[in-house]
Length: 150
Image 1 (cartoon, rainbow, N blue to C red):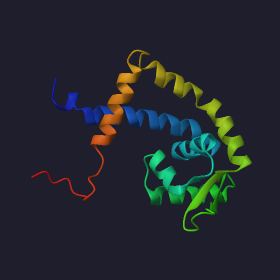
Image 2: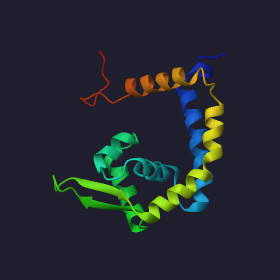
Image 3: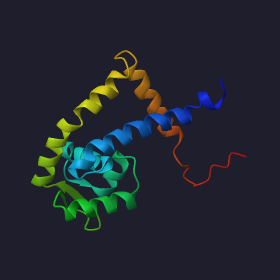
Image 4: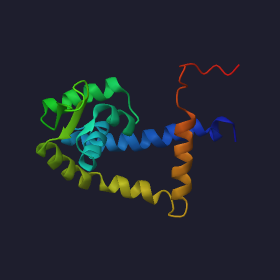
């Protein structure tokens, strides 16, 4: 077996792309992308958060989240309101229309969640999630923006 066949990077990529493509195909008929569904789902659990908190929680970047929120707001799925404590900070809320859509789509993506969880045994789940957390942390861009280790 070649080194490429054993590459953790390629295996992570293949797993993520399979999962993402399936989610995209499942959500597309409902007019939502997988990433938009993630934002709506986060807001369904924790509404009224700073835009920056959404960036962090979804492992995204501020320009992507900003553009996504603009589209979701145009569809009346979310609203952005300036924070009372800091007018520069926008708080993001799910509208009733957004909550209704998110609640409907949770059922639609149910089979994906079941298949994803079935792919990892209950005993292995804590090990796999801890390993993925370590990989995500290890792959963060250094604060100086450079990965020069020399």
